[in-house]
Amino acid sequence: MRCFADVPGGGAGMEGEGMTNRLYVVATPIGNLSDLSERAVQTLREVDVVACEDTRVSRVLLRHIGSGAKTISAHEHNQRKAADAVVSHLRAGRSVALVSDAGTPAISDPGTLIVAAVHDAGFPVVPIPGPSAVAALLSCSGLSDAPFVFEGFLPARPKARDARLASVQAAADAIGAIVVLYEAPHRIEATLQALAQRHGAARRIAIGRELTKTFEEIFRGLALDAPGWLEARPERIRGEFVIAIDRAGEAPADAPAAAHRTFEPDALLERLLQDLAPSRAVKLAQELTGLAHRDLYARALSMGARAGPKDAREESDE
Ligand code: SAM
Image 1: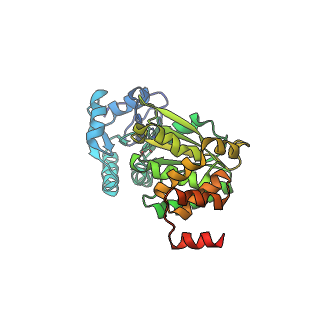
Image 2: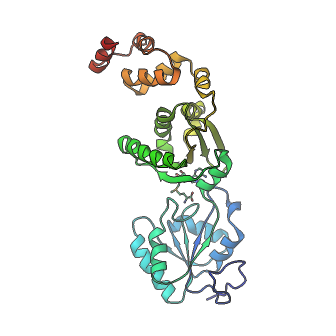
Image 3: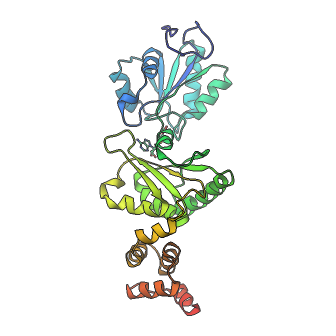
């Protein structure tokens, strides 16, 4: 067991006792290796065991920094077993670090069960903080100075996603908070469409894409404009995304006017009709442009949108 007494601030109130019997929760980069802190390097070099979300991913990092620590697997599906193994190592007087593939463990990543088990077993848990996509975006979003609700990944299925989004948004609105989401490349388009439908020109959102990496981008604008931003460059759809939705009442006062400027009604309708039934497309276009429902409906029909039974009913009701 090597001694850790020289690690600045590297103890959990046990000065001089070295690093035995402790779990170190170590943040690793989310895309830029230079973001690995000195303290993280030192910890990963000095611990006996590193519990990894994916040992293949973390071994590359450990090799890079010259760490010879033993690795054990601690992924989403074996967390209970991994927690037992970590506690056994601590009981045997060893030190353990917990890492995920990228960013801070237990933030939309495995780790919570292990950390809880270590607390329950009476061993110290020591944070080695560092990169996390949620903090990286919030600090650069320029959204309001508000508390935030971190939701992470929404459910994959559209119905469940929309239901969850509605309840998270309601809870956040009740306390005037920002909502932060993580999203995968194959779902980003649908999620931004859902946010545009829900918030239109009424909310500002920020999107961090590929933060800290070569093609890092930050979008900051109305929810309404986010799908257009994504589509403007086809390669954008690839990458990692974090989204922050501002609290209510922070969008620019002229936001509805901006929406009119942003979308030419026919182009908007044409795009909406690609994904939605005519009745939905027209309703949304009406909300976004403020134009008359009847006019928009006529335009949709002239574009070749077929009126279904519900649509036909709606039209005769006008
Ligand atoms: N534990 C990580 C953290 O602290 O941020 C998050 C892990 S979670 C499995 C991965 C998700 O985080 C990605 O799908 C993306 O939504 C977000 N993310 C991670 N790295 C990112 C980056 N460089 N830029 C934008 N989002 C990122």
